[in-house]
Length: 147
Image (cartoon, rainbow, N blue to C red; front, top):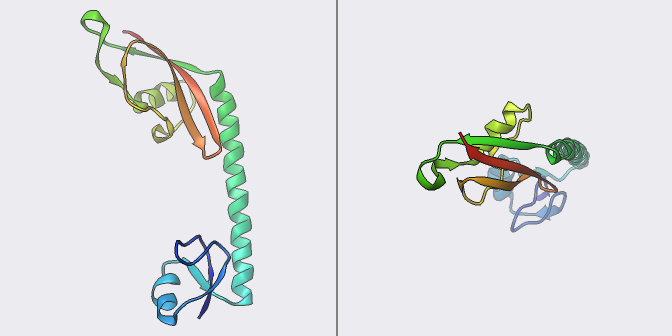
């Protein structure tokens, strides 16, 4: 049976490829999982439309990420923390704390996009990268100060 792949699939090919596979594999696995369509003219047009919609959505997301990156370029956030002897922090500053500090300034960023290699455990000024989109990255200055 000939099928059209809706997405890249490791052993078969890339999106839009017309591939010949065994009937049972196509009917029982690829088509029900939404990985492929049966190769017909209608399904080829359907796939082209899906790809156009997907590319428009990705472009829109990239533009939104660019705008947010421009906003974040001028932003710095201050995070007050409790410290003990010799300025040692009680706990640490995590990506969630940074996301909350940005949200307090009216900028919503998902904490999973904040690229902290490890939690911040001392006072100081840090440049923290934020991956907004696979092609867009911004940097925010984070000030960790005594409470």
